[in-house]
Amino acid sequence: MTIVAQKMKKVLFLTEFFRPEPGGLEGLYTGIADFWEPASLEVVVSCKESSYLQSSSVRAQFDRSRPYPVHRISPFADSLKQMFNKSDQEQKFLKFLEERLEIFEPDHVLIGQISESSQVARYALSDYNVPYSIFLGGRDFKNKLSLFNFKDRKLVSRARNVFTLSRFIARGARDYGIPEERITVLPPGLVRLPEESKKRKKKEFDFSEKLKGKVVVLGIGPFVPRKGFDVLLEALSMELDVQKKVHVLLVGSGPEYSYLAELIRIRELEESVTMTGFLDEDNLAEIYQQADIFVQPGQDREDDVESLSTTLMEAAACGLPAIAGRQGGNDELLRHGINGFLVEPGNVADFGRRLRELVFSPTLRNRQGRMAQEIARQEFDFARTCEAILVRV
Image 1 (cartoon, rainbow, N blue to C red):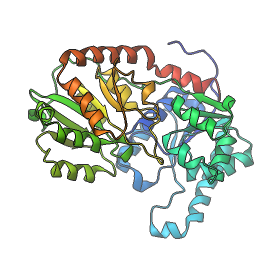
Image 2: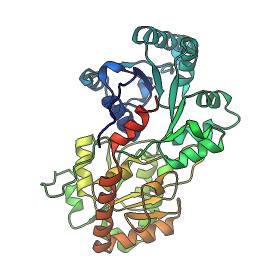
Image 3: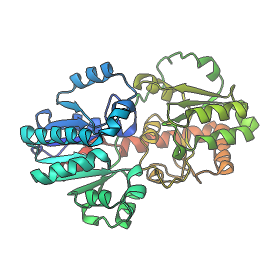
Image 4: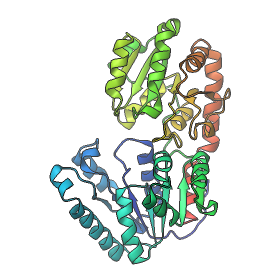
């Protein structure tokens, strides 16, 4: 797609989600930053030190590779001492932002999420009269836009633009009183499609032997309750003939990692399920090539909603049919019966039935996989995603 030629405004991008950390938002925001003219962008990453998965040396190497400045500073407390001096941390962060506003003189600020750092930033933006836009994701709108969270509502309501990753989140924002004319649903797009060809020689992993002769079912973290991977394990424990036919790969980490590992042990699924732990992007691309079915069963949550799943888009780009919970923006990516199946979140029987259909029908898998790849090719255009932001800031 050809981007409309226009001068890019100088933008300061404030976010907690940025590469080299893994994750959908990290990929999205880094992709937006890479799209921008380097001379017209600075990035401030406000993630606290203890939340990083990558080492400081890996982060430093990544930051040096960017053609624009990346600053990593956070108002969040990382130690007991900092907790007792929270105001000092916030003042340090506020002072840093004020310096960047004075030195860089941005025309606009992009805020990646509702958080403590964005609340602190709001004071600086008000003092310097700099307009801002904010991204609204699944973790932001239900638990942070209620009437009881006045500061969060105020932050969003004063934004020039509210960018949402799905129509589902946009509807929720409208229901919470955000003016419709300020809401922009970003077109779905992948920063970089995983390798699409399955003809190259497959990489050998230490679990590769377990995959031979099996239908490979892939689920990717983070392992949090809304992903519903316990539904997958429960269904597998009940469908013994399916269990013998498949091998499940659960890739990633997260707060539910230990719980899922224990559930695998209790349900005696060790021979049918492998938890790989964290894999870098190159290894993850290889895993996509070895998979046959992608799953994200889902669980309904009030505190964490699926906005638009990057892994569902990646799976589609790799030609994988998917089974996903009918929640958040999943039905905007998955067309029931065409490129996969939508199931009721938390419904073990419903999920098990659809898994059985795909496992025992190679013809159905192939047909839905081809449709998934075609939809991804036609619709997941990251240039359109960036253009939607560019023309509004």
